[in-house]
Image: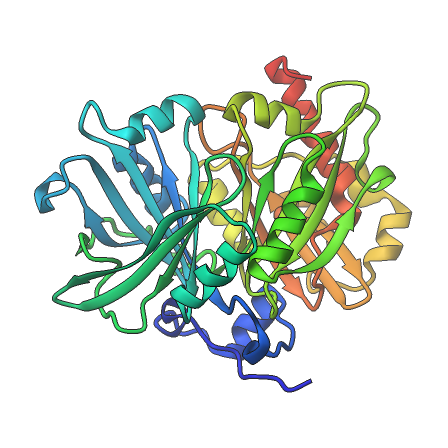
Length: 402
Ligand code: FE2
């Protein structure tokens, strides 16, 4: 197979990430982009709707070490909503909140609470992607169109995916502005604490969707057909069942694995699964968690804890389990350092990974974050699913939702 060099997204180029560094961070594989019906460069942005975008933007700066780079709102002619654009390495978040009392974003927030409404992808040819997607039966929400300002032109379109989530497609090859037309460059007066790492995470590793009971395969098929995504891994049955609840999960990815979307559906268990709880409180399918790739998960967790970010706990028995110790083998730090921080470790045939999960970010038990530090492993921490789900269930029980 011929292998095209990895095309870095604009964000990656400006974040001092070279192809090798990115490849190690998020686990890339070789891919023939020339024959791809839907060539994706990478994630363009994760767009959130929040109840208070102004304060959420502050949280992502103060706790998660992100940089404010652009803004839209009433001061720049957008009377409907505010939007703050934040970056960390190649990861870009756009935090939107309704301003006008009749803003559609306020209706959206009423239904979902804080959450992700758009997993936008940077592509080389919006029109080619849309022709392919339409031919495969995708629902085109926004037809290809140009948006222009003094920084150039972007070409954009959008496709519907699970729930009310969408994938905006962006070709920004002819654009040099801070984000999109309608946004202005904006910095913040926020100053990091002395000694804090300059960046806690460098890229988005994967974005997980929770879909309806019995529809996971349909959505896997959707990504296979509409976007030409390949199947990476699947987890069913005993892999991810605890005493009380269960789920099934399959992972789809673009050709070089730059964009990875695991898809979960609830499975029948003795009690309500974590996916059922999500679907009840988000009121429909949606994005369950975002995994941020970091080069130093220990430093990141220490900095996040110091700012009050809460993580799921892991019982000591996890680290003392001789079977786990045996399976982990040698990792870059003593297990005691992981135990102290409740960082999980998993190993597969390609290497190992370190990971940890936050508690829900907002008021509802819906979206949360993962930090992941990969050392060769291309997996998702299958060996940790049981420990993770037991931890989530302790939280669910405390909320009265198990
Ligand atoms: Fe994950």
